[in-house]
Length: 143
Length: 406
Image (cartoon, rainbow over all chains, first blue to last red; front, side, top):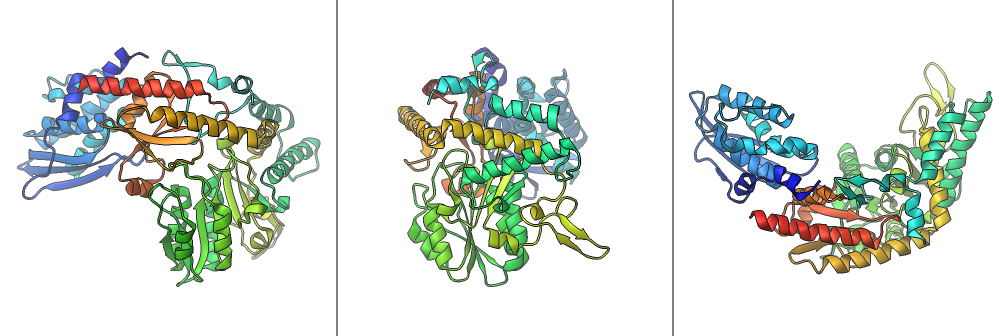
């Protein structure tokens, strides 16, 4: 594998989200709070969701982890904000499929920059990094 | 020591990973296996496989002979007095849990203390947390010095007459610290405590003499010293083991079984319930033969030279943090500024270099180091200065790669 292959993992847009995370911090007022970590590597995320009328009004995250887990959290919060809970869950399902290497139309689902993480599916050891934030979101919504 | 000749004995090393010759720097997680071990396990299954200690037929006798022969090799390897003191287990974790269940739970009560350190691997930490909870004993920590070493004064301050167990790692799997276990054993004994040594990173890399160390228990794994996974050892002083109840009950470990009560076999079989890991033990015996042929002192000297060389090279990299003391075993834990260790490990993997990234099963130690995760390169007898050079080149590329994208 060369650095060209690495570029399929570390796309510019991923690095941008890593360096300049969107929705980092905490929600003001009442919010659902979910803590989740990846025990095998130590990455951890705290996700806060503000849901009103079945719609995600606000989503913020904090935590520590690698470029993939943190950029994925940033992209996920961007994607689910303003979406109905069902749509958010469908996105999560689509994201899991994407990590399994399936073709997913992220544009149709209005998933924003998430498509940039497609390349992670070629790095099995890193898939859990990418799915951490989505798993946290699912847990929050189910609660 | 002829490293190239040694490398020839490790088939797995001769392959390309992601288009580059493999550089394996994760031996602290698990070591690679030399040909004699692979062949011994293969030959055992082809020629001798049978259950042990059921001795009527010939294969049964051969399997038993090989299994017990491996035990004698382990006894000799760690200089134990008797094979009665050498218990085969699944690995270090099971060995330590055996002590935590069979010794700690039976001998500890409220007011007693268990003393450990913050540098322990989870396998020498959680069994004691749980034993403390179960018995009402107090878990105490010896504080570390700034460089990640343990001072004997700190041990003296922490260990009291109420201390019943001191449990400490021989070598830290993160810091590389080599602990003065013999001196710590002395302090434990002065206070009437027993000492349990986690030898997972010790026995594979240096000459271990349990009698000279005067430890009461010493636990280690085969897979970190060239043997298969799934086989490990618990050494214990005979008089302690005699007074302990078995950890697992079932076949193999019994003497007489009646409807409502049973008696146990003598040591060491009392602690080996169920059909043992026979092929694993055979592989462990072969690994010990292999290491003895090279000589543990030669191996240690080679690793020391290599880790000194690596440290010197790593220090030339701008923006690298190296954790642990100057004097260390053959591993280096580090972080590059602004690059998460997972990302470092992924870039190195693209270069064919295998390192470990994460918390190394030592979350309290990560907190002590004030970091979430680190990268670790660990060496064994088959590693070379060329491997260290490849690591350094890989890290420079990692910096370049992440420097570019930012």
